Image 1: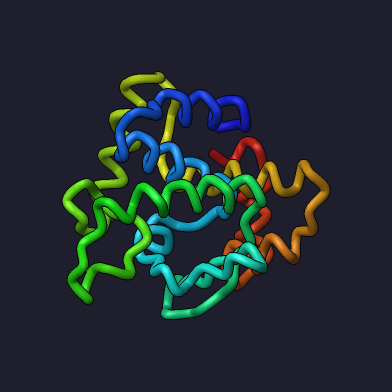
Image 2: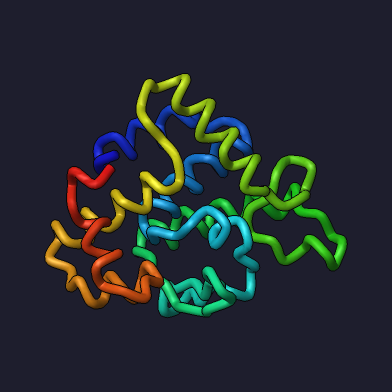
Length: 171
């Protein structure tokens, strides 16, 4: 999935309904951060640092890392949060979850996979969180990013794992 395809996916989400705007934001967020699905769906509001444009995530093995995101993502994420406020569940158990459905309950891996499945059917593009993770890695390196820094962003123990992400034929 390349930058133009990401734009096609985001446009295919639509802009009228809350869930459409949320889905477009999800695509942008996955592509701009390279997060794993479980990391993304588990983000809490307190994990976001607006000033530094970073998100704190808990990855495999309960390891914590800080992942940057861009200015445009910050802007559109802020717009999503205004929308989100109308739908959020005020229960203390769910109020802090970043990604929610219209019912106010947090998105799950399965619900995000459903979003991707519908987008794939609508656009014909191969879409899933891991493909966006690989696309992030390729885009990062294509833009002149450092492999070691990419390794830290992706949360890889070994640089050889990161090398798989920056090989365009890997997926």
